[in-house]
Image (cartoon, rainbow, N blue to C red; front, side, top):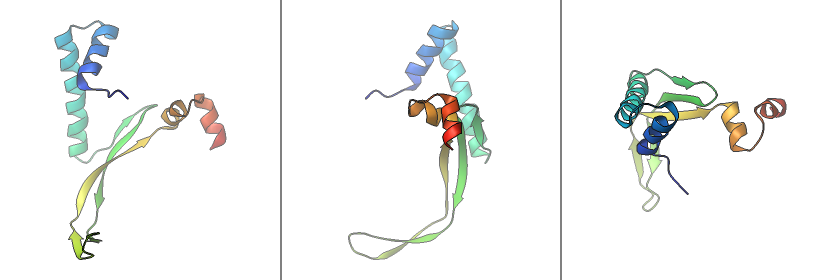
Length: 104
């Protein structure tokens, strides 16, 4: 299994768009920085036909240490979540984009 990295994304931009390698890397960093800044500010990031990244607030709850059984408070925190689009779900499942809409 291969992992998609920043370097491979920058290389794909370089080969498909025709920018220099440095410009491709700078473009990728600018996009990622903009996305991270929006999420940090509490905004959702929606990429059409791909999905939506959003920050959710989780409340305080009581957890349990599985080894000892002692209850431990889990503090409130923010978590990043991703909801894939129907188009992405269909691609992952090897279906045409329109077929996913018919089944839902």
